[in-house]
Image 1 (cartoon, rainbow, N blue to C red):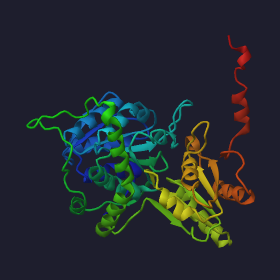
Image 2: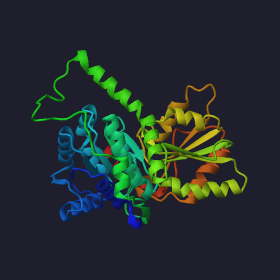
Image 3: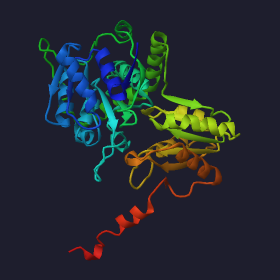
Image 4: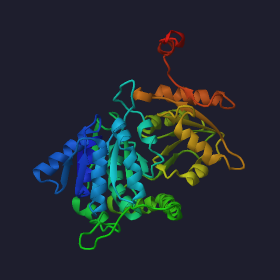
Length: 400
């Protein structure tokens, strides 16, 4: 059944269809619509789940850690500073091998105080041991959330489903909401391998000496490395039942491309017609969408990007002192090839600034005319007047 709903509600519908048992959350714009809808489902009986009101995001993650440790299917959602507040417990959830699913709505970190989209919040958590999946549109949000529960429970690893603030979280589009019986066939009730049981007491996540700590981390790494193949199998089963699939990456007209544009999230949707327009003019250009960021799909990167001459990576994030995070990862993935393309890094759309078709054409033309990358990352669309004004504030010599 198709309904016109916003991206946030697509998450809520997926969580309802997944029959989550425990939800703990704290409101934060632009994530709030997700948990508002779920609280209504719990209140009116649409969803038979325990909704835990907490005083902070740190407590929300602590609550779902407790719920998952008890064997419940647990869900939460957050964004920006709320996600940053969870940071300590994100490490705990993954190291404890708990199958928690969290929706994360990308929002800029302050200051300046900003509620619009920016991927730096989720990418700052890339080393916490969570699988990360970045979505392009509302249908992919719903489908990925359902798949995330399967993936988390098969690998005993937490999964973060990530969507752009406002461009996706608050935009309405027709979304196919699947039949509950089909979802139950795809996603059976949880059968946890790690579970606290009052009838069979045990200690979980206790003190570990140096003699065993490294082995625990090794096992988490091994599980993470299997996530790409596991997601592929889950996608295949999903396609059989629901007749659609998305994939960890998507390569569009990359085989004969001299220049490949690399995108993630909603920028991909903007780039598709740009690609078609450039191709119609005879330009040998391709588009490569990355959905799966952790684990990073190095083999797919090498397979689809390795033969190109140039790669233009559009990053809606920044690692200060290093540049665009997706560009860094792609450079690292390609560096051991005998011959690898030159990687051009572009920073655009931070803090919710629009990335328009003209922005993408500017990036393509800039990449085409240069033989080698210049500086590490090129900032697209900077207002030099604001840059100069900000730099001139309070000279160091005037500080007392």
